[in-house]
Length: 501
Ligand SMILES: Cc1cc2nc3c(=O)[nH]c(=O)nc-3n(C[C@H](O)[C@H](O)[C@H](O)COP(=O)(O)OP(=O)(O)OC[C@H]3O[C@@H](n4cnc5c(N)ncnc54)[C@H](O)[C@@H]3O)c2cc1C
Picture 1: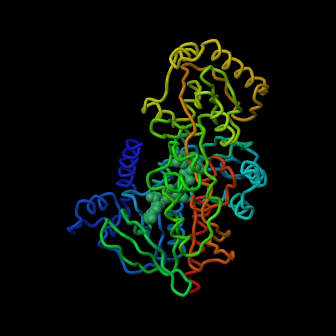
Picture 2: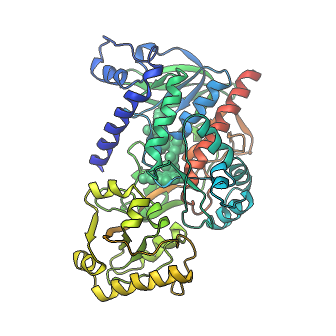
């Protein structure tokens, strides 16, 4: 986990050096202050020098993940003067780690590729995946603004025109970068570039400890920068985008003690800080026990093996080399099937075709997770499963693909390609904590609702910190859509609120 974090940090730092060139003038002045070590490295990366901190801004954004940077860009484009505070040494949060893509229905890229899709189908399938418990107003807004969000990213130089499919969806609506690579690094780099171009200040190592109100209206935050004495900064609105709580042992122990010893795929900063910040102001917190475990996680370091691997055709087998589940079922069901196996683990099995279509696999290979065989029999020997069973599982699967009929497990999607192009590969996986469905209750304007369902004035929340949109089970690809759709809305709504004051 630590190694992955340092790789991510290095990658992000490298990205920032290039991404922020155009916005450097106000953001990268060298400094001779007392905290020179940390300060100068922040400056080098394109983050704002702490010396440039002002006493007040139009709007403060707490957390520089995908939702936060999107909200900041929209607020700036609406004429506001926003600032972003990020508690970690780099921006990106869990968004940097996202892999498979972003769902949207009716996008121009789907149309160009002849994929017929509707927002109603997207709505119904997401509702089914969430077992009917999703906040239906948020869900309607979400599906209706999904294609627009793809366009908005494209207009800002972030093109997601390569399509794949995730569990519980009936058509290819998961948008990813042109080369089929993981979405996170590309999206974060693109958002950082847009933040820098607009000269939006972004302070790192800036931990927001409290949100202030005056007469029931939010009017600023208390932030501790570089470990120095915390300062009170004024604002006419605050947007909280601190992400989920999948890396908080304390919150998991409180709401889901059964999960506290699971590995987590989440980044270190995903500790649910926004829950406490909002709860203190009387905001409603819902569904905290709804935590998603992802079926395919490397157990050594908690690295997620993205759903695109199955979306591009991989199957799952148990330690006996037999298939045991519809791999494209929703995450809760696939995880439950793995946990029902004697060793509570399984293997993703795929061929070179899958490997070349889901290029994130190259990263897993570099980490040493991908086992290889020239034939299926070789692979069986390498991973120590019965050869005859694995050969039979792959042969039966290939017949199912050819006849478009999976009589064993009724899989109906991600069946375009047989597993017949050598070499053959396996990755051992088991479930891990992945996503928190619970969080802050908001309306479709992203306003935080108090216990009487009334908006707390000047307080907006977006991203994984929100509860309710995904119901009991989030569909893969819906969170990146969530952070862009509701991040945009938060920026626009906060701007309208500030201008009306
Ligand atoms: C490994 C992995 C793969 C994933 N793949 C996909 C995918 O392919 N598709 C999909 O739809 N979803 C995916 N998800 C889920 C998705 O990436 C996240 O839910 C989403 O990116 C969350 O975005 P966010 O902006 O809400 O939060 P984050 O991106 O987590 O950003 C929150 C930021 O707030 C900061 N912060 C927290 N507390 C404070 C504080 N007190 N003060 C200041 N800053 C603070 C954090 O440090 C962090 O940088 C994946 C998640 C993981 C972990």
